[in-house]
Length: 397
Image 1 (tube, rainbow, N blue to C red):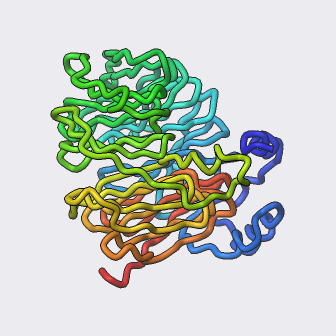
Image 2: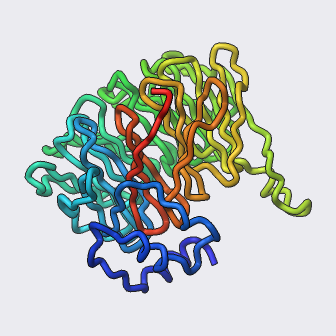
């Protein structure tokens, strides 16, 4: 059965929400023992567990101003804003009609936006806990707040990217190719956005003019759909990742490809006859280090690759037992965090390539995570219907 089938079956299970605030560790372990991979549920390093979701929790975001609030969205068509310190619910972002796959706070934490797969996007004023705007687009692929303004950007399955002023709703659209806009990122200058598409192309858009400054396609683009995009701190470099196993480094001013990183699959898990499996080692996540010229790329086969941008070469390969779902760099150090399908969060020192620590507590794969500004906590979401808060202990700080 596929993950979706399993998830559908789980939807029929009645989950008792009583005492969700303070789950008793022992009771929790016995409840979840069935159907869990051996040993996966035994260890729980988390400080707080948020259990109001009744299905897989797909996304999490922390409020940028204080890092005290989290918003999570799930397969139960629900999104919740809750306190990180104790898991206390602040309010529910109600009214969604499909899985909530995107959620995030505005740069100043005044608003929180939630988006579901059907394309219904809602914005709430956090302090008043009230909905101030909603809009419906095509099937939603991604959503992101502007780094300096109350402006929301989203990409849809019909290839369009939308930009709205919040709460007025003034709107602009950026028409891509006739295929899904699979990933997007507003560059740090707040004037441009980079959007990746299912046909392997990438466009850099001028947000004010609504025009595309650069289009990367053919040899410059990817052979398969783009999965992720990131920029460095000043926005001069962009990195794109794709199902085609390549990560491309692009100069954002010229639109030129600076170099291409490719990782051969290290896990030939498929039998010889099924070459396709072994071939496709999709790039799942990537990001730039703020304090050294390094970039990290996470692959479906569980490889975390640390690349040296000054020499454009592979510096370290950090192997995971299972596929990497997402990676994030600490804001002011050369430490990179990964979460993977085995349900663990790991911290890696990108200078040495060595693992610093590992945190467990979920009984299923981790689907998303967020790190606070001073890198003291990690908030994770999982297929086990829970979100968890882990305190990061770092002897080196």
